[in-house]
Length: 263
Length: 346
Image (cartoon, rainbow over all chains, first blue to last red; front, side):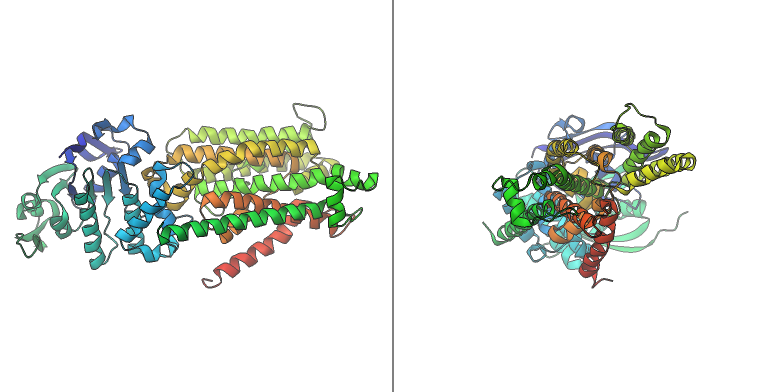
């Protein structure tokens, strides 16, 4: 597997508040990587620094061996797409056109038949074809989230950056959307996903790798079974937990217990 | 091709057809308008014949059509198109449906320039163009402020609006002070300028505005995709689709401020068309800026032409300025459309 993304010594602060401290990791092709951490750990900030929405204070980010700063936004968005936590709409358009915006880096003015085909296929892939000609602002929060995931997929980028893509979804759609993402990555040669997520069981089930963020630093990075230990979960989330290992019949599960009393 | 793509293409074609129909209606109404007025009503076909040179008409009829009404009709068409396009661009770039070409302070700058020329006699030239030139230069001053603001990376859409409001207040205060010391004749001239009228621009002026529109309009259309991304999901969403929200917003605001300046320097303050035409267009073609910009332009032309024609025929020979008529006719019609569309929600 070739290296798709590399992050070296990334630092970011809001004023004097250091949010990310010396973050380094890399992602290979065909990997689904989850970032876990408590609220305010820097998960969203890390994704926004990689996507150049936020300007890091120092460090190097490379996508397909190209320095992030050497790419213009069009070139960058052909290589990475982004699903924000929420989308604030001023003027709403049809779902088909929202997903078509994912093709924006590939088209100037005229929409090609291929762009239309990709949008249609993506809508079907995420079972959104019934919503295609409904206005985006008339959808529920969960439906909107799936449309934005569809837009990111239609973009055809190598790296999907997703910030809590299942936070507004019901249980069934959480599972189906994550399955869609895993299927997309596993069926392609050169795609990966970096997903900030708050549900450790979803991460344990669908991620190939987990990066655990705590206090702006990576405290653990590896296979779900290596990262999601009771000790790590206690240290990062401040709760007791019981780990049920993966079997042929069921995925790895974490049963969360009580808060750990601070000494 | 799959059924979803076909449905998308069909919808897009319907919108294009609708825009062409409004354009055709505007063109036909323009001919009617050229034959209609306080001095003589020629009828549609007589006007067509005179325009095509098939019927010379009387010398007077021909002069009325070509020298009096044609410049006015042309200015209504291009002025309405420019102001409506500017309104659509500004609303999209700032993500705010309440914004119009007057919000950014461009019109207030123009009013200040006109007031300085009328009351103080301060201008770069000493002829009939003094007011026009002053209005244009002072509105350009506001464009310059927008450019300077755009250099700040952290400037948000809300900040642009607040600065526009501040400029409006400052210019308004200076204009009020000038009015306080003005003579009755100067006050009358200033009030007349602020009404917004199509009786002032000459054919030469209308041609200048047309040429500007021909140059600026393709640029506006070129930014349709960027506006879609920006108005659909805000700055983060725009960046993720390859659009730089800061530079895009700055460029679009400069373009729309320029469009506004060029028109109101000749016509005086006309604001309503820039607010209403984009909203009406949204009801017809939705919010996709690839269709919204051309639809706003033709609807802006239609509104301006209709308001001016009614303004100069309703109480003929008295001519009511188009700025007033636009609000009188367009306001209730705009409210009706909004209430009809959103009736279920209200």
